[in-house]
Image (cartoon, rainbow, N blue to C red; front, top):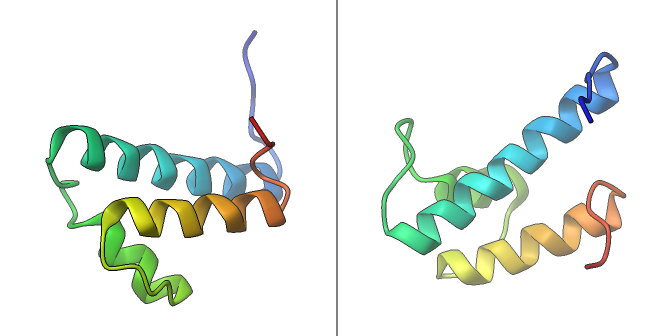
Length: 73
């Protein structure tokens, strides 16, 4: 089923989830994003305090749930 993000809220939600996916790929493969580490970006933007990518991912996913972008799995 195709999904079109045509509102500012939907576009922002897409980018939030894209960052989550990029961080998950960094964790799984050990590679970095072409524009630098996603973990560093998230720590700078949202002030996360985790020292590992997994810890930052947990904090980020908690915020995504709080913001209503990510549902409980």
